[in-house]
Image 1 (tube, rainbow, N blue to C red):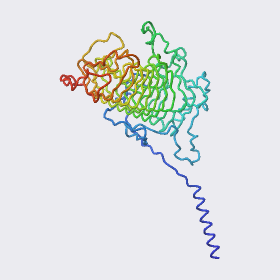
Image 2: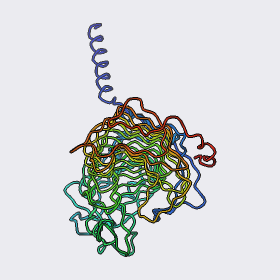
Image 3: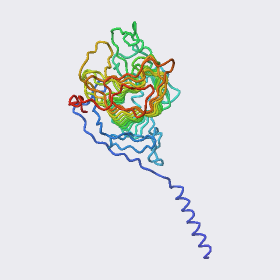
Image 4: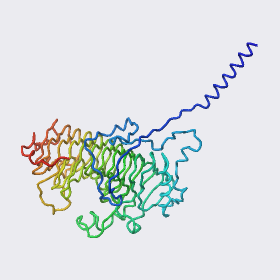
Length: 499
């Protein structure tokens, strides 16, 4: 009897353990803090690409290292978001809450995807549905080509929203096909969003050729001159007044103007993009940022007809690594100070990059008459391949010969160039520091700079004008024009130049 009872107890215990083990699964909770901020009395207009955005605080810390991502803290504006491209399900076993319930395929909302039909309404409907749920996904599936008109996809939305393009997404083909009622300065706009991801394995096709051929474009007319007439062209993708963004994985090509533009944003992670347009396509900057802070750009390839990456006024804490540029106009800070404006850029780092077959390499360009400063800029471990103007600071930037000399200028200081090596096009000197007569460039540091002619022999020595700094090692070619110390007359001039 005791043996039978013992066996029964063991059998019941084993059954309970087996049943419980089959029901125990790890459940995690994806906590998000709520970000609180007051809205301005008159918010900027997303339809106006020149609308001012909030200026950044240059004292904010740098963005986190993308190699060791941590969950984003929306309370910290310097922390860029790093969610998974496809959001995970916080409650995997709850009925009615599977990940597929949060994926909104645009074809389910009527998108045709044949490259001819107007699929705008389907994308708008899918966006509204995804915006209303946490971790919603707008999906443009592969094997389709979707055409939509100029559209603003606005928030606020629930956190974790994903816009995923696995097929092809494109605007109308050229100015004649562009609806007259639509904004001709922008196409795909994301406005007032937080914790959004724009990703996929597909292509954003800009259909830019007919825009580039407008007679008012810089490459048209005799000797590069332009003809009169309307010249508005749309930036392909624009993020405006948004925070904690992730853009990854996409191919973006043939934009009518800028491929990707960020205005008034905080916390931007860009990685593993492929951006392409022909070498002679005008104004096709790859990535342009302005009034934006805490930006990381990593492992991205850009080949285009203008600046590979351009950094406008109001930017701080920008980190770039693993970027390959070319052909292009290089990586540029500026232009800054146009129309006697104040421009502030601080804490920019570019490292482990390649620039090839480009008109410029590493460039800082400012207009005469501006104020403000460019400070804390570091270029490190850059490989040059047949580049004109490998290293250039130009405080006399001008698009015509009609610019007048002015006394004020954006103050350029604390700029370092370390381990910059490769070859240059001998039509221009490889190092060019042209600084303002009244506002000298100061604390320029060069170390391990070795630039050799791509073909032929050195024809121009490095050029300096009112530039002050030091050499940690001797440069190739030697730069003897860089002055040591600081100019004695600079301090009285700089009153009012703070940012």
